[in-house]
Image (cartoon, rainbow, N blue to C red):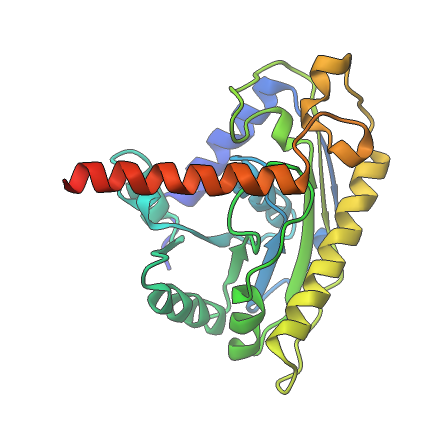
Length: 255
């Protein structure tokens, strides 16, 4: 397919990253297949994770088609860009269409990027995974490449303003690909993916070269690591409250 939009967008993001002085550590690009389909499955901690994960894949000469919520495609600015980069819209009320689109893309030799947590983790620890990554990889007969991202939450994440301060470290690591067995259970595959992403994330957190400057700056560090980020339990409560508020806004508009 023609790539008229993706290359200039990548050039733009590289310029933004340089402007922010981001100190990247990127590992494991060799685990992405040089050709052919694969599911790239990562944790989700920031609004920039798509750009970060795509940056790592670019080191392997691959472009990633991310699965993104359908509302982004209706944005007058982002929508044309998302369609031009051949990303995959996901309407949670009609997920079968997005699933079929992703499986066809995988069968055509594309790398499809997914965030199995479905939403940004406010605790910055792994949430429960949805089964979509496992199901589409098994359906298409392609490998899953687990991946972890750490540090991006310090720049732009949920419930926090953009911090354009220079010099923040962002670490990316892809792990060894694994091919789900045709007869394996989806829950089993999903659990293995969760284990692998969790191990990668722990490794990045253990090696992260920067630390909070003071107690107030510890918001981006998980509570279990001494930071002030919400615990997973509190994060779940906040997600539920947000979902209820969104439903109320939609009902108000309809009314």
